[in-house]
Amino acid sequence: MRFTSLVVELIRARPRLLVWIVVLIQAALWLVLPLLLYRSPPGDLATVLAYGREYQVGTWLGPPLAFWLADIAFRAAGSTMFGVFLLAQVCAVATFWIYYQLARAIVGGQQAVLAVLLAMTVVAFSSPGVEFGPLVLARPLWALLLLHSWQLIGQNRRNAWFAWSIEAGLLLLTTSAAPLLLLLLAGFAIATERGRRVLTSFDPLYALLVIVVLVLPYLIWLVRADAFAMPAWPAISDLGARATQWGWLLGGLVLAASAILLLALLNTGWFARSASDAPIIYRPPVDPLARDFVYFSALVPAVLGSLIAGIFNLDRIVGGAGVALLMTGLAMVVATGDLIYLRRQRLLRTVWAAAVAAPAVAAVAAIVFLPWTGSNEVATSLPAKSIAQFFGDSYERRTNQRLRAVAGDPQLASFVAMSRGRPHLLLDATPERTPWLSVAKFNETGGVVLWRASDTSGAPPPELVQRFPGLVPEVPRAFEWLINGRQPSLRVGWAIVRPKAP
Image 1: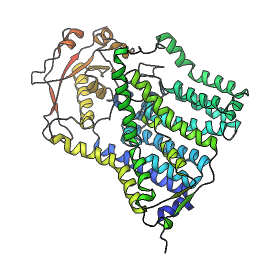
Image 2 (image 1 turned 180 degrees about the vertical axis):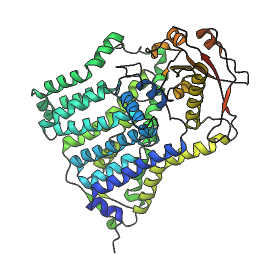
Image 3 (image 1 turned 60 degrees about the vertical axis):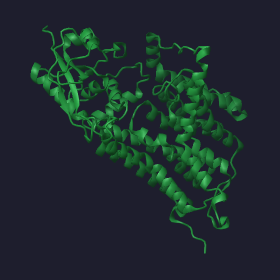
Image 4 (image 1 turned 30 degrees about the vertical axis):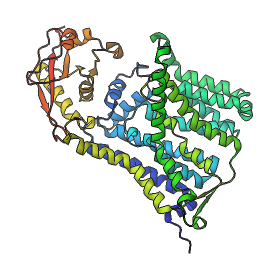
């Protein structure tokens, strides 16, 4: 007798329910894990909050929308990281749900579930999604743009123009890669007959007007800041190294999506003894234009984004790996065929669960075991809350004023910038990146200067002494890690710059 698992029955009968179950479980995992184990914000999240606190129309980090939303979420949660972590997972849930709607419009509801399950195994949608910022916010916006682009080109739904224009404007306010992504969509439309027919109406002009209105303040800032300059092209002698960089970036994308390739390989007939008994997930025939749209969206952003990053020697894919790999699951489903046989179901479930859980296991292992090696520092184990509270309270006790600014070591200073009162962050080594505060203004209004102390004397680095003359170091403060292991305590040198009398 043929056996069909509960998962297969859910795919056939309740595909939406299964999508909600797996997506919410993954979101809950990456919401609870950072709250339990992270003592400091991951990645550049503390810097994102420091920039969001200023509500600048634009900065050297790019468009402002993600920074504003991060600060709003942080304040709404009582100045705790819960709000920012929750916002990141809301973006993840929204991305997968929109992705399911797009896949359902192309391959039907049952195979759309398989596309979502495959996409969830991509590493870019796991632990990096905790670090809310432009790359995380761009994912649901890009998914919405793809959905409404298909509705416009493939389904001729003119009422999608307004939503498309809003999403395009928000994407332009989120990431500097937005112009490239929008040009890719426009290029696909121009290259297809149905796309050219859509562009011949007046609707694109109205959409362009809406986009300009949304991004006008940021455009004005770009003009005033003279930020339209292109990066320098590499010299001919550097082309070999840049090609190698492109290869590494492209290889990283393949590695991040390797679980999709493994699951597809394990589901082939090579590993099945009784293929005739395998349950079948059926779909109606796919529109040839839809097939081209999926392959284009899956391959071109990844290849072109990695190529541009390689040419200009960037350390990450243009647009982010989450945007570049968003359509890989759907592309694999489309390439498989109208009938998908689920062979070796138990093995497939085990490999899928391992691929989804592996980033969480790796994050926990890094926090627990790396401190015992004594060689690597776990960034999320820094006691950010204790650091912020100590130096904020110390400054207030010494000067009888609340802390207004913090400078010195960028990582430590960004932690203090999250403390009560939200002092301004000054990147004193590159003051042009924090235009809301200068070194002269800092010396006038006062603040705390931090650095990592190498010994108990706590002498400041020479470059800090040059930027802040008369700096009088205090006794260094030692902080314990989440797990000390073989690591010495974190010793922070500090000094107070007292505010000048009016």
